[in-house]
Structures are given as structure tokens and as C-alpha cells.
Image (tube, rainbow, N blue to C red):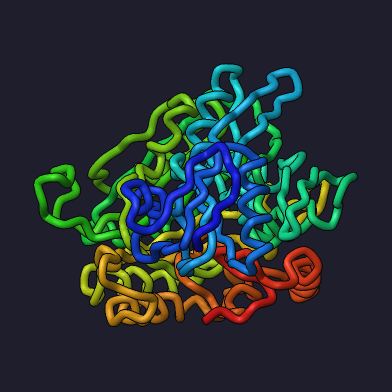
Length: 458
């Protein structure tokens, strides 16, 4: 591809010094290898890139941070939005305009100046726009709902090069579909979101040794039935290696990390978590009143790019026997290293927003997931033996939950799903509507989203 679009941001080709850095995201198992990388600096650059690709029959992928890349683009045009990181807060209306490449930390920091917060996730380095298009299960979710529930406007470039203002009044079908339907309908260059009046939360984690306190996961399950909507929580279970870089208290242990975010007074939060503290010896306790700017410390997830895969399901309820199986099947004896995760849903997640959107399975009470590292991605492929082994372990760990499973949550699906897998994230009638809208706005399947709707995945 010798020609290129006219843009203000730089354009990179294979073999050029900046090409590899621009095409590589946080997820290192799958890397795009486009013919052109357009490092967009504006919405007009995005429109120019899309128009250029459409005229030549080339496919287009979009990447902000690259956390959720599932299928690589080979050839075609990759639009990198990382330079489009502007955030503008209007404290009077409690809204923020967020550009396509901004991370949640960008939004958190800008909102905090006015005593406000977004409905961000557990990892503040994730791109705010793609996270929201997938639904968005955040730290304040049981109190306020999905991030997508609080979107006021989206600016979209469609496959035919049009720039659309998408609101409940203008392009209402797209407004419904984009909030939960992901990147199937065009490139979102900015969104306007509602902020909430939160400056501090009571949050952090309690760490337990599962060998000494094996009842932690089931005790957490029973505890979640007693907590108010202001409290959002989760549990991660993982074996820590016995290495110097691991905190001494956690080395060589199979740990249950109970993560808590309470949108209320610290003293009330202390009372709510007391039953958890009383379960047994606590290896590490990071619970405290913290500014929302430090909300990433609640889950304390790694921020170093790496290769990984995951699988998971949304559940009507948590079966104690399935939970016991998960601890064993994804524990230290598993053939691959696993991080087993449980999230408490319900509360505002279950309530319909003012303007309906495409998010499915709001009646889910919990989410279960299993994530594993897969080498470094340097020589692997989607069909590698290492990835096949990981998938098999995940399938075994998730299988005991099948009786109460109601579908997938695409935000936590790191791996290419076939069409039935993507379909399972939605109600049948909503998936049919989403497919019809993709046929209308991207009939030639020019865009390569992380989770394609109405398209067989190879």
C-alpha cells in the first residue's frame, strides 16, 4: 500500500522505527500487523483513515490501549487513538467529554478536581471509550450501574466516512447499539458521560491464605447477600510464586484477595467488612479511606503489558459446590497458572437506565472468570499449543457453573469467540437487532472489532 491518507497525526509503515511501538498494545498475545498505522490526532484524522481504507476495500481496526485485542489485523489500516487523550469536565452539568484514546486515569484525575468521579473500572490504565462501549463493570457499579448507562453522547465515524452525533434524539438506534455493542458500527472519536459526586471511597483488599482459611470464597458469597448497593466487591484467587519481588506475606501461598469499594463513610465501611476480617488470619490489609484518584489500588492489578487469555460466565447465583471446584481446578495444582475471579453484581447493574442500551443479562448476580498468562506472545498464535492448554484448563474450571450460567460478559472475555460465543452476551432479540444494525452501518464488515456481531470468526 503505497498511498496514504492526509492526516495531521503521523503514519507508520512496516519496517519504520515507530511502527512496532504504535501497533503493539497491552495484550501481547495478539499483535496487529497492518499495512499502515494511522496515529490519529483528531476526529478528522480518523475520518480520513476510514475513508481511505473504504476506497481501497481494506479492513480497519482501532486501538487505544490494546487491552482487549482478540483478533489480529493483517494488512489494512490500524487507527491508533492514543494521542486523542483529551478530557474536558463541566462541573455544573457533572459531565465530561472524553476523547477516544483517554484512559480512565485521565478522566479520574480531571473529574477529581471538581469532587467528581467517572464509573471507571478496576484498572485505570484501560481506555475509557472501549471499556464503555463494552458495557463497563466498575468499582461504583452496584451503586450507579454500568458505565454505558451514563453516556449522554457519542461522536462516531461510520464505514462510509460520515461523522455522526449520536444521542437519544439523533441516531437513537445507534445510541442503543453502541452502548454495549462494542466497536461493530464505526469508530467512536469521543463520548460525553455523566460523572457522579464521589471524591473518596472506603476501599482496598483483604488477603487470606486459602490453605489456612479455605472458607473465604463461600463466606464472601454469603456476605454479599447482606451488603447494601453502595458496596461493590470481588474476590481473586491466585497462587503467588515464592520470589523476592512478591510481598513477603504472600510468597508461595494460594491467596484469596477480597476486593472492596464502598461509596460511603469509612466507619460504615469498617462495620460492613468486619465479618470478613473475622474469618481468620489476614496476610495483608489495604482497606482505608482513599481518594478516588487512587482507586486503582483496590484491585492492585498489574500494569505491565503481557500475553493472556480468559474465559468466564455470568451467573444467576453462585453454587457452593461449583465454587469449591473452582478453588481446586484453578489452584496451585492446575497445569497452568490461573487467576480465578468472582464479581458481585446486582444492585444498580440490574436496573434499566433512562435510555435503554444493548447490555445483556442484567439479571446476573455474579460473574466468574479464569485468566492465565500465555508465554510472551512473541512466537505464538491463536492456535498455539500453549493457548490450547490454557483454554482446556479454563473450560474445566468454568464447567461446574454451567447450571446457573446465563451468558458471557464481553468486557471480561479475552480471547476470540465464535459467533455463538458473542451471541451469548445478549438477549436473542437484541442480538438480532444488533446484527441488523451492523448490516446497515458496516455491510462489508470493514471494521474488525474485538467481538464481531453477525459474523463468523475464524
